[in-house]
Length: 125
Figure 1 (tube, one colour):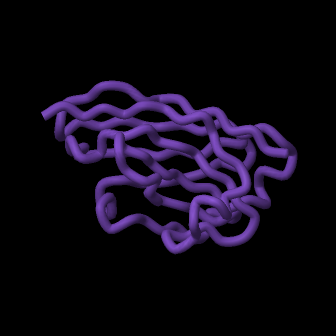
Figure 2: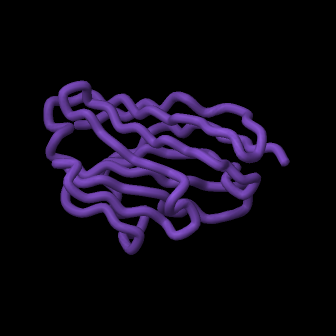
């Protein structure tokens, strides 16, 4: 079992930055690929970024590439999402996700093993 708790969301002006944090419980955290998804009102949940269990590889949605950075610290059971140059279209609830095996943009939401409760990010224009 893995429990995920996100923090760090909030209100920021366009062009600003936020850093989201995901704290995971469970001794098997390091065996999971970790990622972030987001869901805006009236839209489906979408992939944002993911990182392999070893942190060797990362992948990003085209919409955030070059602006967001995902990282993890297996010793502290945490995953971070640094978000820079935020845009109003980044406004959404952001969810931390864990999956045994790969986590990629092509992996559907129902194949994610664990979800956090979500944290709201609002970017004003």
